[in-house]
Image (cartoon, rainbow, N blue to C red; front, side, top):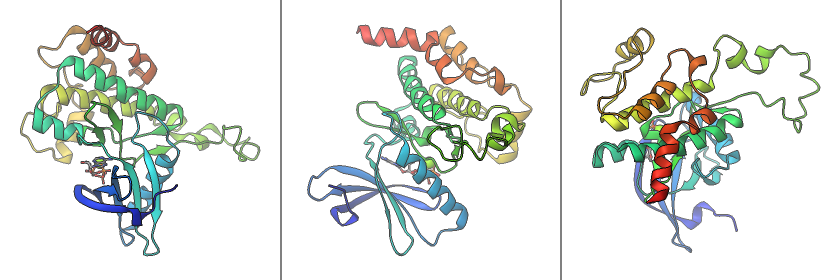
Length: 279
Ligand code: ATP
Ligand code: MG
């Protein structure tokens, strides 16, 4: 039977995001733990728009590499809450801070899981647009799942044969369907690949790769580093396979970046995953 908010007991705050708070909650009858993200009804319209987008994506997404949503509650006060599976090791960002940098075999496993999640999302025409260590959740089995769809973009679904728009949209120009692909911003999906490359590099090096360690990331410095700088060079000590993998993610020209399915076949992933399945 469906879970209601009355069945849930709040245990502690897991994190604060813009506009909402994430609680650890326990189901009173089954004792199962969940994460509940609560967004207040009086929050500003931009945040409410983000919440509704996140709701639409989580409600439909069904992948072992995307955080699972067990229910959405809307109160008369306007408060909205999502019940999610509880990821008991927190985020890759907290793991980096508490346990230190990651080895290449663990990065290969993380990359395989995030790419499998992105492959699912991209094939369902969803661009995440905010891939970073603090949006990748982890559990004690070292399963990694993509979370936080607040700024994600759902591309046009009019080509779906089940969608009643198909007929009426027949004469619309390509950019009206899919502005990210045809309207100048050449390939929106490739943005997630760049972010994944930076994320993996940060988890290997221990600091954000585009800035020297310890520097506070202000917007102007970052913008200059990203737009006018060279792509970050591969970290010292990294294997040739890992360097090559990062290079495939961190091409400045989005059209040259590899896609999720190409990267899933990259030697960095196949050789490391082979090694771990042999041991
Ligand atoms: P931010 O701006 O920090 O990205 P946000 O508003 O986007 O925050 P989330 O990223 O969804 O909100 O969640 C905030 C924090 O709550 C996360 O960084 C994480 O520590 C914790 N959290 C979120 N979902 C879960 C979950 N399912 N299991 C465990 N912890 C979670
Ligand atoms: Mg977040």
